[in-house]
Length: 286
Image (spheres, rainbow, N blue to C red):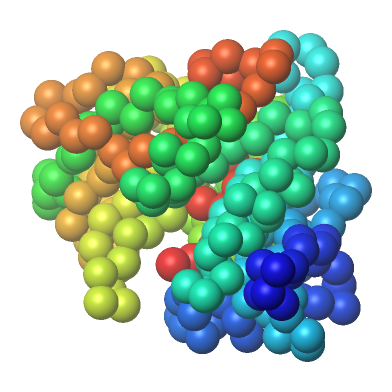
């Protein structure tokens, strides 16, 4: 066997973060602050590692990152592992599957992959991953006339803190420091809706909002016009993308869209119990 074919996966530890970050900056995406994206997960969790890597001598030649979390689902505690940044140099591609197998060998986790490319999708399917329904609505953000006092929209952290309670407030606390997540509340009368989203960027410019969480789908749909106006006027975002499984039926004046593929593997959870949170989608600002 050649030296390259003998390269074996090892866990990514604190001591490896700088080297892994430099590898991803050079070979994957130069715009991401990888040190923070890898090691500065804002929620509390006892993570066994930051994923797995391949090293040849002192050089990192491949990575498969992991973000871990513990969540309450249907009254029980479930452990999650979100996989991301599966990047291996061409001459070491024979070791790609060893990274995946090392990660999956960790028992007791529900695994998610929320941005798989075409090739990995086929490999993941062989390893018992299933697709999520990513049917979505693409809503143009238009300068709708506003009705004073009807719907209030705020991204002020103090307002969000005062408005949310219980599980929604805990969710906000867990994600307030996430690099890619943005937060706001919709307030109408005594009802409120927590919305978490990220922005899709093209050539470095923000283009549209991708909704990751909706606390009150009914209020969200009723307040969609003032929300779309807010995102256009305040943030320059031209459209809003929201999945049907996140906010319910596709609203009027929107276009149907099949969002990018997302996959999961779990012995206990159904597709309806999987979401976008505690993942690369909130932590990695592409």
